[in-house]
Image (cartoon, rainbow, N blue to C red; front, side):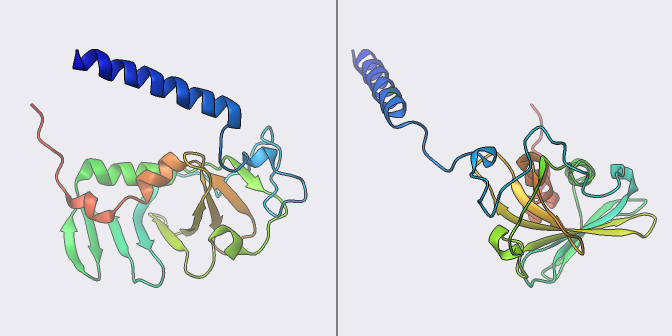
Length: 195
């Protein structure tokens, strides 16, 4: 009896929420490509392909990734011939879980913008100012790249980024950034044992 009443309540609630959504329409900011042309955050048309952030590289080409949030010294994940190591100011050099470390390097190598914004304003408008998070990538050949990570757009859509020392604001998809920017402490937490 209680189960039937609960099921009935859930159906009525779903119908009411559906009616409310149809009446008011979805809430939240309009999608990027629906913003007016005079908007400071105007973008290229969605059909236009975004240029790459930088020349492509494979995860095996990376030697280290350093995460710097605000003015903090940062945490570095680096690969040696024998292990993956994580170190920071409050973290003595500790071996990282290899599978998790490989996922971070793969995410860094897979970063491909959804689009490049046109007619952008100051970096601070996108959360890319002096206190923005930075991800420093060091490749095995000694070259380096720095990604400045800004504000999140609408949930699940992406995040503003800029390559340090270059013009242009890009929108990157959220998933590889979530892997790349996850809590570094999770890199040393062992995976749960299987059944």
